[in-house]
Image 1 (cartoon, helix red, strand yellow):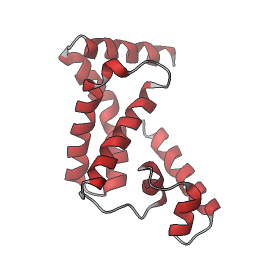
Image 2: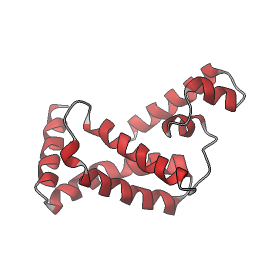
Image 3: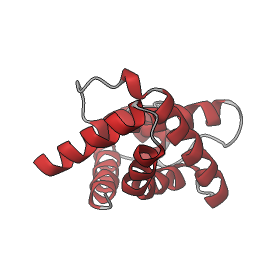
Length: 139
């Protein structure tokens, strides 16, 4: 974990200095997990790839806003969420009918998602926990 933190600090420093190597390291480390998340949300390979590109551009543009109050990965997830939300609000895709997508995009909480899906809230919570666990294991 310590080495990972040092690696992330190095990547952040390189990006802040405008060095392409920083972007390359960031992309190599996080493109897979972020793409997987985007694909789960949009369900379309080319759209997920385009949103991944937008996400990484936004991460690099906002790198100076990162302040260590949350983990770097969580901070990147917030940016990814914002990119997805902007895309769905622009009419790019319909609102997700999947509980994870509904909650990740910030449109619903667990209770509201359960009502919309006409299911039990415990089922929704379990589904979201399982998808988050699977996502964490993929990184």
